[in-house]
Each structure stands twice: as structure tokens, then as C-alpha cells.
Image 1 (cartoon, rainbow, N blue to C red):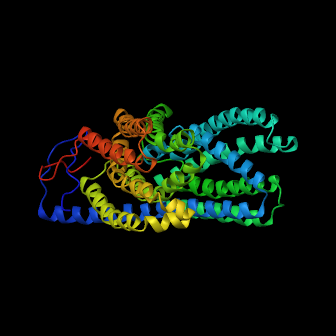
Image 2: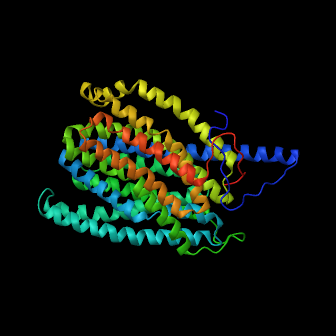
Image 3: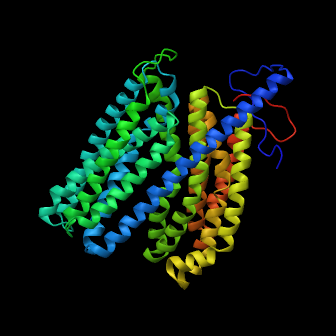
Length: 446
């Protein structure tokens, strides 16, 4: 695996600097220290992602047993709609905050400004969605007495989840990812604890969800503001226009990259009916938990590079190798035991479609390179290539997926679109950014 992840030329400075042996020794120690720090911070982010998903699953599992199914259905619809509003409202500001806050002359003000913008956009989009809920709810499905509660919950959850995203980004930028994990754990545990004591009506279910977000925001906001001083003497003046450009670039890239993931279940529902959506969607969600690994360490590398204002080539190579060594055995085990995993999820009927899980697991490997390239492009502020990363990954996947359905390809084989599209996207973007094959010389910084 030596030099598996190719050399990367610098975007702004390709000069070769000669160093003495003693300098090289010091540099290697610093690189090793940087790698350990990025790996540690990435591990905290991965634990936070697992805590969010795991505790969230437990919350809904308990709710399904304690509450009427129609209440659970309404609550799931409300939170899902609010989460969609959150995704539309963040506008990539979390990524812009990670990139610029460490070098800002007034970092605390920048954090508060992004929170204010997120709150304003989240409130606007939340209100629009709330009106849609009101119109739909008035037509049936939701009791008239519950409509005000449901409408208010959409707005509140949408806005507060935007704040969660941005306060987490502030903590990640400061290198305090352990607080992100703590916040995620507090959120999940509080949500479950409240669920056990509230009344068994729709109001109780939504109150448990909403109050837990308020508690999480209090923890995250306090830690976030305390992480940054009012003044940074070595910082530069950052205007919101600069932050907005990179933020919107990330926003567009994320929408394009994840578009197939978001709409594939709906397309399967239309093309194949409701039953296949169950094993297709659950297989994707199970494989997606593995994706947390490259995503977490890519974000950690991005935050580290933003603080250092450069992302070292050796650091990227070490991260890529380490993630490859870690993920390959996990994916092999996942493929081997995919039959068992699918059977545990849905019995023999699900087990017959284990190939779906196998293919989704294989699609995780190219995301190692894609997430590290995304970190590199963010540090370099190469907005156009960030957007193109989303285009050359998301568009081919969606095209092959829809084309496969039109050609009558078996549903079990359709996740191959994610494998082929992710590999092709990685190879194209790697060439654009200058990642080269083993054996060629590259620069020391990216």
C-alpha cells in the first residue's frame, strides 16, 4: 500500500524547499503529531454520528411501542419535514464557518453572525413548510386540535436543528470535537428520558423531541461561544461575502452529491411499489453508517487544514492509508455477513436481497478519496471544483440508477450505480486536482 494515495501538487505554491536532516526529523514529528490529532478528532466525530443515529433509532423504537401508530407516523412526518427544512436552511454555512472562523480577527462575532443568518433562513423556510402542513392537515389526517402543535413544531425543530449544525461546526473548527460527541449524547439521552415521562399523546411525543433540542442547543451554544475569543490578534478581517461564497459552493456540492440518496427510495416506491422500498432503504441506511468513517475523518482533516491554513500531503496520504486499512476489512466482513444482517432486519424475504447491501458497502470505499479531496478543495477555497465534485458523482449515479430502472434491470443490481458512479467521480476529480499515480514527485503542501 506504499504511496497508494499519490502525490498532490500545491494550489498556490509549487516551490521545492530543501531541508536539513534535523529539519526533516522535526517535520516528521510534527506530521506524526498532526496525524494523531486529526485521527483523534475524527474519532470523536464518528462517535457523535453513531450516537445521533443509535440514540435516534432507540427513541423511535420506544415511541413505536408506547404511542399510537398514527401519532408516531405524524411525528416522523413532522421531524422529517423539519429536517428537510434544516438541510435547505443551513446553506453550507457550517462548512464556511469551519474554514474561516479560526483565521478571523473577531471569531466570536462571526459565529454569532452565522447563527443569526441560519435562524432567519430557518424561520422563513420553516414557516413555508408549516403553511403546507396546515393546508394538508386541514384536509384530513391530522386532528384539528393538533394542527397548531404540528405547525409550530415544524418551525421550531427546523430553526433549532440549524443552530445545532452551526454550533457543532464552530466546535469542530476549534478542534473540540469531544464536545460535539457530548452534545449528541445529551440530545439523544434527554430525548429518550423525556419520552418515558410525557403523556402518551401526540403533544407528549413532539414535546419530548422539541425540548431535547433546546437542551442540546444550550449545551452546544455555551461550548461554542466559549471556544472562541472576541478578538484574535493574529486573525484577518472576514466579511460574510467571503464566507457565503464557499458556503454556497458546499451547499450546491452536497445537494448534487447526495441527490441520489435522497430521492432513490421515492423512485423505487413509484417503480416497484412499497414493499421493495423496505429492504432497499434499510440496506442503504445500514451501509450508510459505514460512510460515517470517511466523512468524519474528512471533516476532521478539513478543520485541521483550516486552522493551519494548509493541508499537508503526508497527512492526507496517512489518513487515506489508515482509512483504507480500517474500512477494507469492515467491508469484507459486511459482505460476508450481509445475508445474516438482512435476515435480522427483515427475515428470509430481506435475506434474498443481500446483494443490495453488498453493493452499497462497496460504494463506501471511493468515499475515502472523495471526502479527502473535498477537505483539500475547502482548504484551498476552490469553489468551482467543489461544485463539480457533486456533479461528477451525483449526476452519473442518478443517471445510471434511473436508466437501469428504465431498462428493466433487477432492483438487486441497481446499487451498482453507486459503486460505478463513486469510483468514476473520484477518478475524474482526482485528476482535476492533480492527484497523480505512484512514483511521481509532488509538493509538500496542498
